[in-house]
Image 1 (cartoon, rainbow, N blue to C red):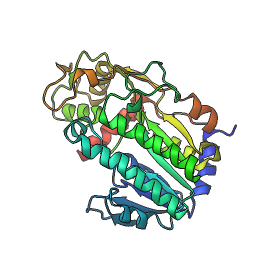
Image 2: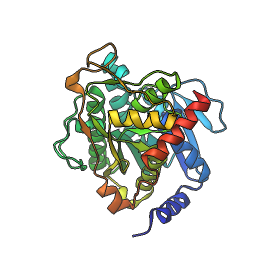
Image 3: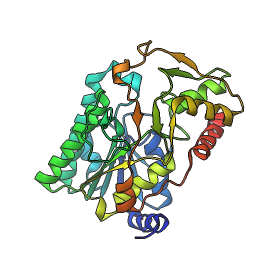
Image 4: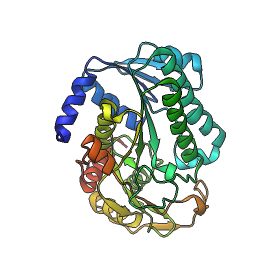
Length: 322
């Protein structure tokens, strides 16, 4: 099998001059993907519901729930990266019906438009949330899903629709399940960015529960590597891949590591589940650790950025930009 570097070089050549649409293109992970595609010479169009965009790419302001807007944006494209979704623990608890409408309904619109216009590949960005509290650790892709949040339910349903369109209409899709992606530019509603913001303010990080929950965090450039390898490979057609880093850490250890990197070490402040704006304990997953054996064997994926290095890069960015 080729090395990952060789695989990425081949994938870059595949995307050169290719017409690509990225929905939710102003989002965190999507923005990093767009930058990589630009470097590779792809012809990228962004679609997002937000009005503010001052970049140099073609931009379509539109709502993925509007089929006419989706169809118009997708017409003439070769590859679709479908990122558009509502996410974030606090937001999804507040507007569950909107979550289903955007995350599932928007995906169905994308699938329908891709079929209508003969798009070659659609890449669905999914989530480790579909597993809920997994029965197997590390968790492979064929583990029985058991989502505990509306976000996880919406992503599982979106994947199921992709499978249906592949079987009924011959659409080629790839689904990637992200595990706790972090990095420069992430909004302050996720655990690492929240910890960074607290340390930057000279305040202790807040942990809900005991802090013994364990996660595998994925630096954003690693997530982009694997996403593009999956999207550019014939072996990725109608397949699902976990995307995760190589290191597992508890929340309390993560907080201490970020404190060490920041030069402002402080012990975390612990709070109970169910406090304002936080999901109930019954919806908290204790262990979220992926098996990336499939991505490794099929795509040649390897995580290149260790946790300390990724956190250091992210902290440096937040120190300058937050």
